[in-house]
Length: 370
Ligand SMILES: C=C(CC[C@@H](C)[C@H]1CC[C@H]2C3=CC[C@H]4[C@H](C)[C@@H](O)CC[C@]4(C)[C@H]3CC[C@]12C)C(C)C
Ligand SMILES: C[S@@+](CC[C@H](N)C(=O)[O-])C[C@H]1O[C@@H](n2cnc3c(N)ncnc32)[C@H](O)[C@@H]1O
Image (tube, rainbow, N blue to C red; front, side):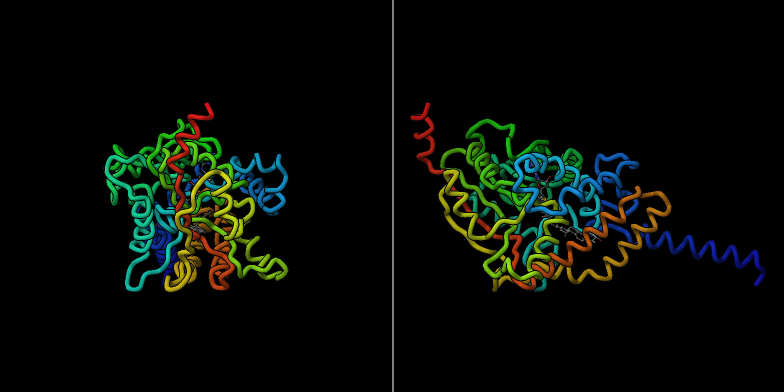
């Protein structure tokens, strides 16, 4: 073959390969976010790597972060940075719902996710016309499923402005923007009046709070007396042994890669809820058998991870994705290993469900206190 023909053939094949990896193979888990659209939230391209370094130095030793009061105050800002760094990668590689769900035999991940979400309005007894609060709403996957399933109106709150814009765009696209609203704010001090919601829920979000009392206290305040609150909590289980170095490494790995100021124990949740005034109606680890593993979706994706890191590398090399994306992707890959290990050993669950009620008598007590 002539050298010129060889060069042309190599160029065409090379271009074809890049095209295949980036546009075809790199297409989203749920179509809508393509690899070529990977931004890093509202961080400008040149700041991504610095922000990642800052994030990493803050969350490297989570327990210490949570115990020093001054550091605990900084947690929401670092959580915001974390979601700037990961939101697009999550949407691209996981979809619009940023949580786990038990696997369901013969059903797709998308079905399993939706069913896990629909359990929430069912537990709340949500009806058309009710006003529900979504505490830590992400880009609104659960909010849309819950509004569609129950006919209720949902107001979501997230600390991350980039997510607010993504969620609003998705709500419009789904034709649910008249019933789903998104607010940018801190769930530790919410911009809502007392007793303004019929029900509330949080899905894998309150684990970002340095003190669970603070977020539960806020939910208690904004709920109407008699109103219900459901939360899916990330916790360590009774199988966790603080003296086992493998357990400690696994839990630290989860905390580091998921912006957590320190995981709580399963047996702490109900007492914290009671401390702020809630009645505990029900408590159940939704990961326990007969539920099927929630971590298989993470585990089965080894080939997908390999493909994704290649896509991310090629995109960074071509300067389509900002510098720093590879590091963020690597961090997520690592935390996925720790999450899988936490699930397999049973020392961790991301779906400890609590159903809580604000007592109807809370109204009378509040009146008396005035
Ligand atoms: C509730 C939280 C987030 C839970 C999950 C939605 C995410 C936890 C780990 C994430 C991921 C890990 C590996 C990524 C992979 C390397 C990449 O190629 C594609 C995206 C991942 C699968 C990514 C997707 C979201 C998670 C599963 C926390 C933060 C409280
Ligand atoms: C893992 S995501 C879960 C999102 C959503 N519940 C879902 O399942 O798709 C956690 C969410 O909590 C939000 N969050 C964390 N800390 C917050 C805070 N202090 N105030 C408001 N939102 C917060 C994040 O911005 C993010 O939207």
